[in-house]
Image (cartoon, rainbow, N blue to C red; front, side, top):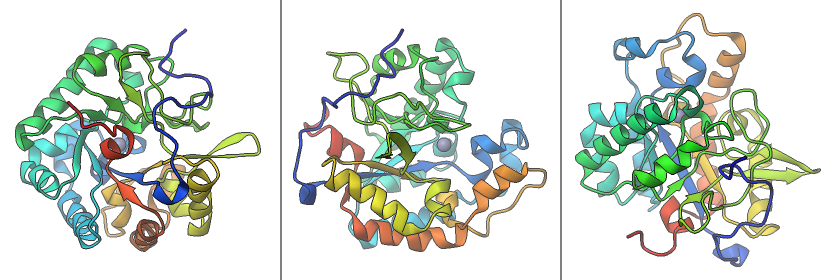
Length: 300
Ligand SMILES: [Zn+2]
C-alpha cells in the first residue's frame, strides 16, 4: 500500500565502488540514558529534567576520540538536548561533523499522527538550525520507528526540507524493525531525490541480521560485528551505516530502579567494554558523515 518501505530490491542511489574505497557512515544518536524508548514505562518525559545528565561528559569523550583520529561523523540530536546544550551543538558543527535531527523528545513516529509528527520534526529542525546556523537535512526516527504504518512520515520530512532519513532497521525485532524493507538506499518517493538510508544488516542464510550497533554490538564478541560489517563492504561492495549512543560508553550512569529485567540486560550489557570496542571499530573501517557517503553531490 505504500512505498515508504519497499521490498528487497537493488539500491538505486550509491554508485558501486571498490571495497578499498568504501567509506561507511558513523552515526551518533544524541540522547541521554533516561530518554531511551525502553525506559519510557519507568521514566516519564515530565521527569526528564529531574535526572542527573551525563550527555556533556559522554559527548566530550566521543568528540575527543573522533578529533584524535581526524574523523567527521553524523550526529542525530534530540531537540530537547540541543535546547539545553546549544554550545555542544556549535562544538559539533565547528569540528566539521554533520548535524542532523533525531526529533524533539524521542516519541516513536508510530505513536504520533501526521500532524503531531510534523510539529515534532519542525520543532527539532528549528532548534538545531537556530543554535548552529547550518541547514539540517538528515533525520533519524526514534527507535527506527518509520514503517508501513506511517506512510505520511516521508512526505512530512520532504515538505520540511529534509533530504534523507536513516530510520529503517530491516530486521525482525520486538521494539522496532521492518524485516521486509530494502537493506539498501532507496527513494521512497521516486523522483523526489529524498533517500531512505537503512542501517547495516548482514544477509546470512536468507535472513537479515542486525549489524548496525546498539545492544548487539555490546553483547556479541567484537569479531562477529567486524565479520558482518566486512561482508557488506567486501562481498556486497556497499557502504554501511553504524550507530551508537553516548550513554553506551558510560558504565557509571545512574541506574533507575524498577526497569524490567530484559530492558536492564539490554541497556547495561558490556557498557564498560564499549569504548574500547568502538575504538577498534573505528580502526578497522573507513568512516565519514552520512551526507558525504550517500549524497555525493553537495547538498543545495
Ligand atoms: Zn534514539
